[in-house]
Image (cartoon, rainbow, N blue to C red; front, side, top):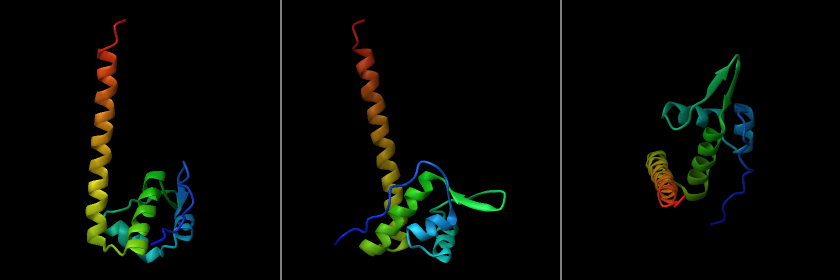
Length: 106
């Protein structure tokens, strides 16, 4: 199965409209993802927006849903496991850098 090419996630918050157009997700689906606690939308004034980490979550969710046919329950589990994996990887990297500092003879 060929994965759809989505643009790179920008390093700054983006409006909801940009996210819905870029990832071909309806506002209704985005609202469902918010209700299910999978995505957080923030508001500053009247304009709702998503932070880069939430945009990345939408990208992952839409890839899982559209390209792989994963249901929302499966998406939730995959996101939780992905989060745990990243957390453990970061802890491992931190412990590796600490052990390099501890072994420094200077």
